[in-house]
Length: 368
Ligand code: SAH
Image 1 (cartoon, helix red, strand yellow):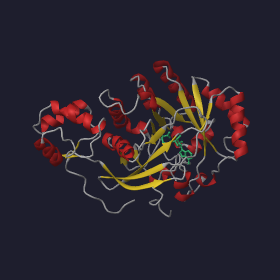
Image 2 (spheres, rainbow, N blue to C red):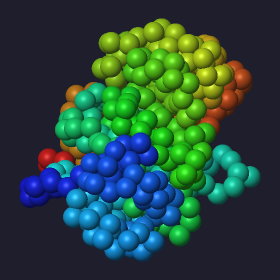
Image 3 (spheres, protein in one colour):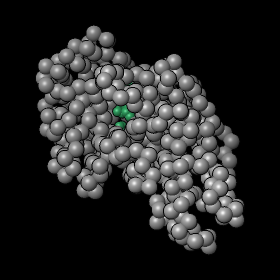
Image 4 (spheres, rainbow, N blue to C red):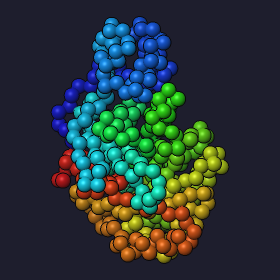
């Protein structure tokens, strides 16, 4: 991580405000409220790259905004492109901390007929508190939540670096989105706002390590975005070893929360399942996986394990291996025989450490 720590801006963070909050801000700086709606659209729907560029506004207002409001909550520090077209962005925040965002052309290898997708994988926290043993972000520990503006800006800047429109968004970057619930939902409300329409709610997926309170809250609020659960094990023993959060919320409790979610929202659930050699890739795992996932309409995304050697893992983290190609395909075949709907997650961006779970600022991890 960078050692220079620029002073946080004293200007007001304008990105990430909902229309009502933006109107309040305009009133607080003595500007007419109605201008807020115009600026809201300009920030997100017709993306201006500075206040100066909003030439439809009076010059005095543009100057006033530039003096009082911060236009960019994060700066692009580094951009890496993978051979497969995946792009990894390293963004520097106003307090000098850094996060990564990934842009992936066409996610799934299974959907040959589907129209081309461009998926953005967005971070929600700097670091992460959950300490999942297979995840590179765990090596950074938890630093802080991202603001709604910092979440939204990842998409705005990534879009700027792509000639094709971003079609899908997954909250699968650094951090646990449920532990930054309010800011994540605020970002969702901005992306899907009728005056913005950057993305439809069904093109946004929130992935959680299994925060039961958050799942129930999404259900109670009838959120239209999709939900994915990082499952990765079919017994509490193994899951607790791999994901310490399982001590707090067992598989049964998670299953109950997902059933509640499905009853309230009518939305199917996606289970994410990384295959680890010899640990969770046996026939009995496939059978247990079928029993767990049949409680609600769902599909299973089987993910190859992306090694995280660059974080200098120790303990169980150092023993994890990807399942062989043959065993991987046998496992998928078995699930299909058991009538489980299966998707295979591709490994886009692996060569630049931009694949699932590899976000850890590899240049900044101690010893890497
Ligand atoms: N905290 C959230 C979102 C971030 S992780 C969650 O746990 O779901 C996004 C996805 O990448 C999760 O399914 C996670 O389990 C998976 N993942 C993490 N590390 C990985 C690795 N080394 N290889 C493959 N997938 C990984």
